[in-house]
Image 1: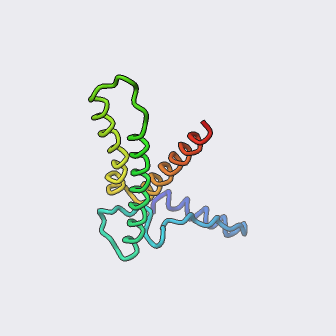
Image 2: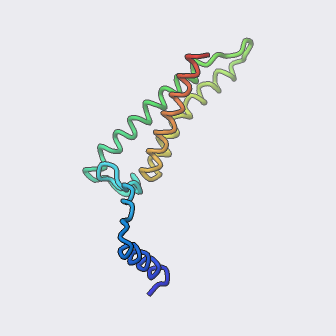
Image 3: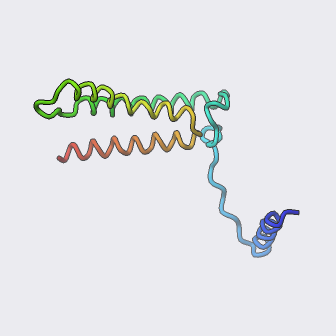
Length: 129
């Protein structure tokens, strides 16, 4: 028997003897899809709507970020290189969609959360500037 497995069993027995209950485990699924699920693992009936919503949110946030980058003021006397660079930089937010296709669902949720928070911060700071 593995020594660590014995330690876990010992802790469980000690908890039972003491009458204390263990804290409930944190949820490991989102709408029936494991948080460790990769898009490359295949799509089940439960995974399709979850990933559709995830990618729709990421696409909307990327579009908003790209629009803000394109609308940023250009310094006076800037050459054509600056305009080309603005077009390239405006495509960068869409990279999160590519990344989300290859990372676990939990990381995709993190990308949505942090991108949405950043967009909210930018909106608030712009309003009170």
